[in-house]
Image (cartoon, rainbow, N blue to C red; front, side, top):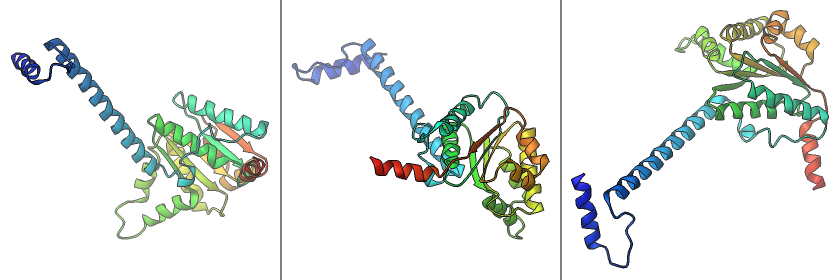
Length: 248
């Protein structure tokens, strides 16, 4: 305290008479220090949160093309797109309430990936861990665990995919899945369901084709909790966006 008083007097003795100091007594100095300390702490917290979000984004599997996807920049041209947008918004708002799986099915370019990325980006900003991975990449990572020099086992990878808050498996049905792939998908979804972790599936296939491809057991697991099935049954979303740009 005495040091603060001496400091104030020293400053007052050397500053020109026409300059008004920020503080004239110990109380003002203490208030100034506290304010600076608060602003500094807040700045550190914001910076740390931004770094954490950046790291989560890098691990999320969200491709660069979709990093800026949000609900706000999802283009709506008709009631079908309005419905899926509204449902996706409701999904993230209720994400913490209970197990919430979803399936987005429809033709290529209809906006499935945009909304899936928008869900992922929203949840990341709210502190959740997300992983979006294609079925091809998922199986490639599983098969790499079979290599002799690999330090990770198949079980290790399955456990890892079971811990993120939301796992989205993309391109289901693009290639012909083998029985082994069905077993892996079932293990992952079953383990995530048991841990009350939500899973999303993106596919170009309709319900009957998905049922035939994945089987009853997998789809039954996807129906647990407040499941969401959205059909993107319209023409290419990207084509509509391009057409709209040409009209502007």
